[in-house]
Length: 135
Image (cartoon, rainbow, N blue to C red; front, side, top):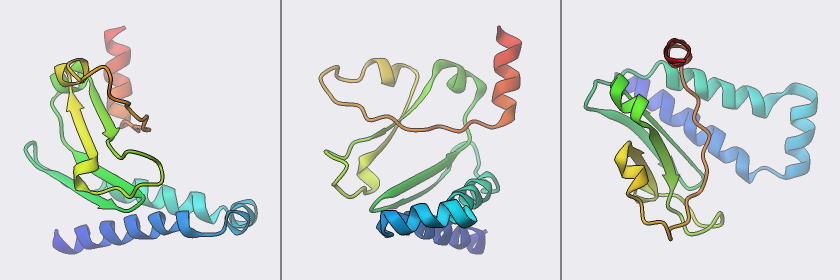
């Protein structure tokens, strides 16, 4: 399990390093080899293999990328799950305290004056099946 976590952390670092690559070179690489997209997809696949129990998480936070894997109950998922970057600006580095995960009422109780950045959340296929069953 420890080795698996090390591999995942290494992939997080590698994908995070893409931010430091010259934009022109990154675009050229994407156009010719799809390298940046393939690196991100590799990280996504690796994160899907991370094993966590109901009361544990896997979190890796670097200066410009943060990931978290957690197991949640169906009721938590149905009440809502939000991810917020509490960094003051896009120029500020992320750290463990700048990634906030909120469930259900925590999101609605959030102070309305606080700026909430957006995040992309990719849900597993099981969630889509569950959502179709509720509609």
